[in-house]
Each structure stands twice: as structure tokens, then as C-alpha cells.
Amino acid sequence: MIQFFLGDFISPGGFGLDRWLFGFVDLVSVQALLPLLVYVIFFIMNRFSGDFASFSLFWLIPAGGIRALNWGVLNDPVLLVLVPLLWTALAAGIPFFINWMAAGKKWYAFAVSIPCILCLPVTAAAAYWAFFSQRMFTGFALLFAVYIPVVLSFIFERRRG
Image 1 (cartoon, rainbow, N blue to C red):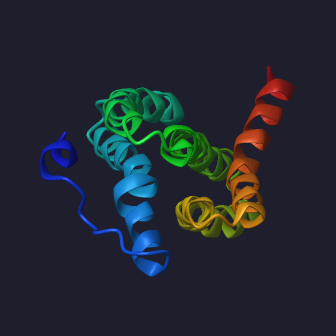
Image 2: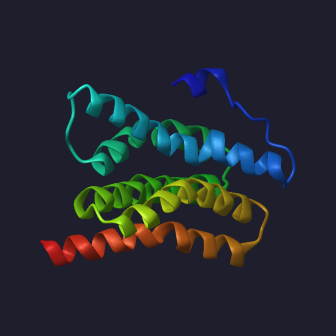
């Protein structure tokens, strides 16, 4: 809601670092990381102990609806299709690594999960930037990389249940 009334925090420039920062802060990564921050606060206060992925996806529904109304006028498939896909990948991918660290408590789970948690938002913003810059091969490669944890999460849930 704050961003709806205040507008964008980063002014998007051309195709360079300004556009990537705009994608990271205003469109993709920070939008999907805000529920994580709220979830952690609730978790520390012992007010919430549910699934982070569900909490995050539920959190993104109103943001997606408001954004769809604004972006629908622009008729831009990068905004209307790609950004919600990236939100979903971050909302489901980061909890996969967090749960893997919590369940296994092995050194290699931490060694792999922490860099992946840090790299996923950066890669998602880079995927937005690549598609915006009409670098389709790079965009699809980065989108594939962002969705690897989601696919692994589905595979492990299927095997477990």
C-alpha cells in the first residue's frame, strides 16, 4: 500500500544498473522478501508458526491484484506475467532452503542454503532485467535458475507425502 501511494523508490533508467535496481527494489525481490521479514517478526514473537511459503503467497495476492490493475494499462507481458512468476519462485524457493537447513542441520545444508538464499533475489532481479532488455536466452536461463528450488521442493514434497 505504501508503494501504491508513494510510487517507485528507484527511478528506472535505461537498460543498465538503474533498471536492475528498479527491478530488485520496486518490482521483484523486495516485494517477495517483505513477507519473509514479517514472518520472522511474527515467528520470533511466537505469534505464527505456519508455513512461510503459504504466508508469503497469501501476502502477495493483494499486491499482485493492485499491480495487475496498474500494469494492465501498459500491456507489458514482462510486468503482467514474469513479475508474478518471479514472486512465486522467491516465495516458494527461499522457504525450501530454510526448511532444508532446519530439517537436516548438516554443515552442507548450511553451506549450500545460505548462498542460495542470498543469490535467489539477485537472480530474480537479473531475470527481470534480462527480459526487459530483450535478452531472451539469458532471461530464460535465469528464470530456470530461479525455479530450480521450487521444482526441488515439489519433488521432495511428492516423495515425502
